[in-house]
Length: 113
Length: 119
Image (cartoon, rainbow over all chains, first blue to last red; front, side, top):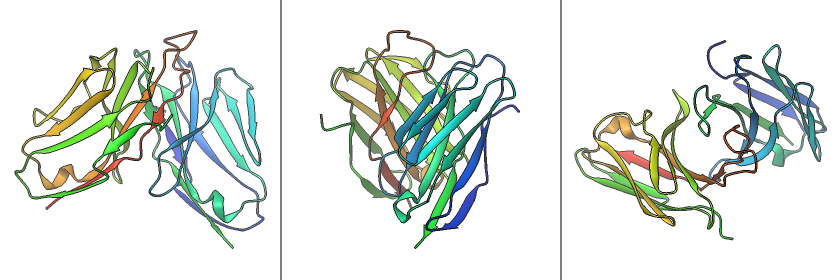
């Protein structure tokens, strides 16, 4: 994998369903992985920064795991609510740059009431 | 803190016109980033500054784009002349140098974006 890739591109679930999606990234020269949540017409908002292989982070009903050896991270949402509808972006530090982040194109989640 | 402030929120202009986007980072943050969001390419970094100095402008599409940061609380992104393919949402973000700087751990705080439409 050369770039940060996210799948699926979009997802529709019913209220109350649990769901998850994937961020894949080059595993070499890994430093940190970021997850952001972006609601339409608002600013992308940071959810998690993950740095260590095996890291797990949790914020309410949202959690994330990290596997740096194989180059992927999962984001889980338990009991989805309509207010979870947003685009979820992941990003990793770009090789050769201290502060530059390379973003995936995001997973657009729609939770139907 | 009010967060990152961007203006205008929406801009509609005609091809060939000059467009200036403005950003006020969070007070105390020493990094400022300009991004462009399009359906085709997602969120792309255009340029970033550290302590008002441009560090990496490799993402700036072409000479029509320029960015300045005259002081710690203000930055502009200018497009001259604008073209329809410049239509996108432009985000500004800022971050603060962390204790273990340079590892890419620092959270970036985004502004609300400027939605630009060039006709």
